[in-house]
Amino acid sequence: QVQLVESGGGLVQAGGSLTLSCAASGVIFSIGVMGWYRQAPGKQRELVASITRGANTNYADSVKGRFTTSRDNAKNVVYLQMNSLKPEDTAVYSCYAEMGRPQGGLTKYWGQGTQVTVSS
Image (tube, rainbow, N blue to C red; front, side, top):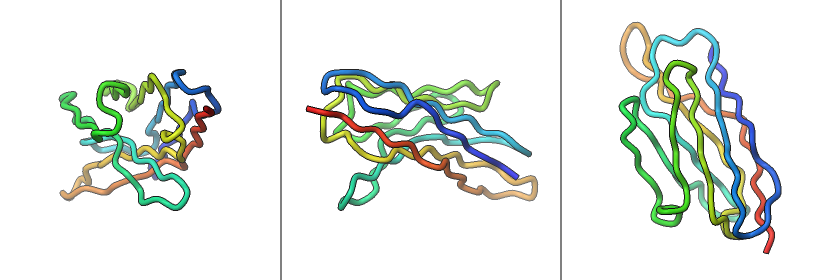
């Protein structure tokens, strides 16, 4: 069984910074893409950032230049460094990981979600 456990959410003032982390544990065959989604009340879920095992990254336009994702493959951890936070960044942030199966194919696992609130 695989688990993704997130940490690092909280309340921060506009202009501040937060770092989220997400650690995968359990029976892991391989991990491919890892990343972060967010969902604000009344809005659709949005892909914020993703990172391949080789550290190729992709970001939503709304966070480019402010957020940075990274990963530690040895520890099966993905991070999201969030700088210059804005009130519109307020959302529940969820990490995910695409994991390979021994018989082939991928399974997408999700973290439990962590609240990030940015006050103006």
